[in-house]
Image 1 (tube, protein in one colour):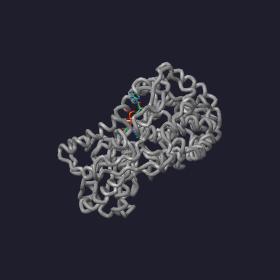
Image 2 (image 1 turned 45 degrees about the horizontal axis):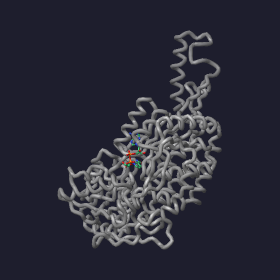
Image 3 (image 1 turned 60 degrees about the horizontal axis):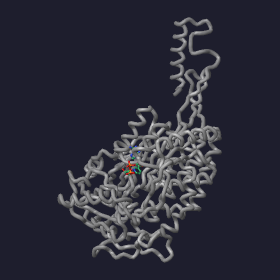
Image 4 (image 1 turned 180 degrees about the horizontal axis):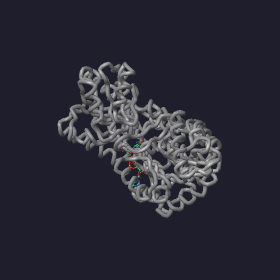
Length: 543
Ligand code: NAD
């Protein structure tokens, strides 16, 4: 790595009053210390790819690693290898498979500094935001490590005629799960969804975003160290529109996380082959501050809601609804906190907000903010590109006076930009929050928990957090997480997060007499016997 590629730590703010810059402590590692040729060779071993591609760090825009690029033929071979490995994996008991997850849990916590460096370098986020991903990986490993055997347990069901019919519901693995994942949470979204798929007895062929492939490859290596058979998790790399459909062409189920337009294409591919899919898509999430909210807590919460990973989080808030009686007071507290956030590129704890991930993200953010300001919105704070910190840095930005048809009002920005709106009563807050095609996440801030939960139940989002931004819902792994409306189909986490990777199979054994006229009963007598049996079953409160 040359000096020009080293993270910039000491730059002064580009403009007076801009967000301060966090300076790296002496001795902090650089990209060259972390992404060594030996590491890349170790992580890419076994990856099917006859071409060459590369990824880059948003911190300097420079190349991080040269990586194998997969053709559709490479994908087909990867699926075939995964399919072979899956047969013996599925033959192990759920408990044996779950034990690998529990070992992974310990390993990911013990070796977290390795992956924190990779996540930071590949995504541009701060170390604290990267640590959220480690937490999600560990939580998912613990949950499915402990609970998968009971989720998958064969279950007795009431037979057509009790005693005569014995029924068991089994959960069979689907086979090879195709997973297509985005760049914004490369550890959480690769491992978090792959772990339940493995626990259920499947193989996985994953196409992560190339820009964050090292993180997924690292997770794969660690899971192999924890005991996963080498061929069970295949990773293929390359252009989304080429490699993604190739995965969908061979897999038995598709788990997709990404944007709503791409999700629709993935669903069309799945429909062509009549395979199932789950889609975790975009959002335009609302945060609602009621008049009785603790305004300091709500202002702290708004920072956590709007600026995690520089706003590049599907469940981050981009619309902030505040009761008109407290709006000015709240906004003052929120803006003061946003202005104080320290921007930085160090592979160390201390910075509050990192970089946008790419030129493309920066362009969207600038387009949304510039258009809003041109059309009359007010910049409360932020609104500036900060190339002095890194090529894609943009300040945490609060907009007031936003209205349709400004793009920032309705489209997902996926950046550190939030618009503030005022409401007069709770019905109006609910109506405004629900006035979107998306339905991923929301939060309600109030001193009255019961009131917050009741209002939350009226919001059309897959998760609602009361007095927390998103982490309370997402971190509660026993409960499902996913989107309503254009934010997706299906759920991750909890029972749904693992059962979607299985096929339900009913095994029904008939005993003593068939479900047909027999023992000398003619058709009419058999019909009368069955009618009587049905009446008895209802009277006996059979379900
Ligand atoms: P994207 O849709 O552009 O890409 C996602 C993945 O799909 C990438 O791996 C990409 O290479 C691949 N891909 C691209 N074209 C494809 C095609 N035609 N067929 C199959 N695969 C294809 O999304 P992105 O920009 O990488 O990610 C950001 C989006 O993801 C945002 O909208 C965000 O809200 C969403 N997201 C949702 C969740 C969630 O849990 N709901 C989580 C993270 C991100």
